[in-house]
Amino acid sequence: MRPLPDLPPDARADLRYRSGFGCVRCGVTIYQYLSLPVIKDKRTEGGEGATMLCPTCHRLVEEERLTPAQVHGFHASPIARQRHFLRDRLPFSNELPELAVGGSRAVRDTPIPLALDGEPLLFFAPPRQGVGATRISIRLGGDNGEPVQVIDANEWLVTDGSFGFAYRGDRYFVTETAGDGLAVLRIIQRNRIAVEHLRTSIRGRRLEATPDWVEVDGRRYIDRIGSGVLIGLDV
Image (cartoon, rainbow, N blue to C red; front, side):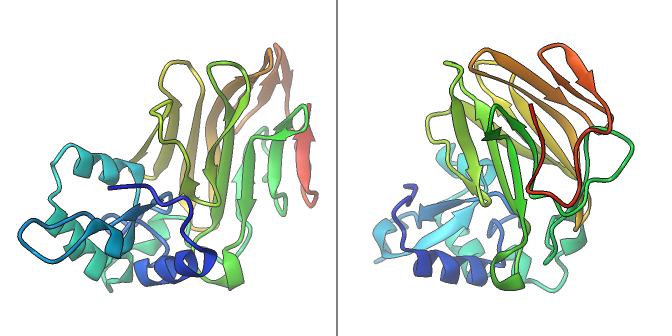
């Protein structure tokens, strides 16, 4: 299945709506825009349509643990559009989420809780037009120390294997394959998210954060992330 980075904005919007704003198989709100796979012996070509899968489900397809026919079935009836789907376990909210990060006070109305030398590490936004899932963006340092946009408004951008994604229980895991960078977001409820662990190095500077503190270059900060501002803490 080919990633479709050049899929037009209107086609993306239509696909998000039809898919229920999540992976068509599991409903996870981090996804890739992908060409539908070819079904052998049928007149269905991969270039004739697009679908949305999270990186985990896409990997199952690449490993041939999901068949092209199964992918087409999920695409035709996305899990997030089904009545029994439990949306409260995932960040489907029309509000900017309340964040648990860096201290005892909840961080509210702050799209960018943390930045390092002006580089936003996390970015949260309400869904487009007030319908869908909280938009999550994550930027972490790559193996050369330069920032890498790993997720942009829920779209998984990494195609070279340098970062991996997993969804376990109520947590989104982003891990650097060859380094120790990571981001773990716990979905407390649809409009409340805990930054359970964030760790990265960018241009020689190192940042680590939990719900209780933020540590930058060995210096620890508690309750320093502001609410009601664009950037809560830039160090």
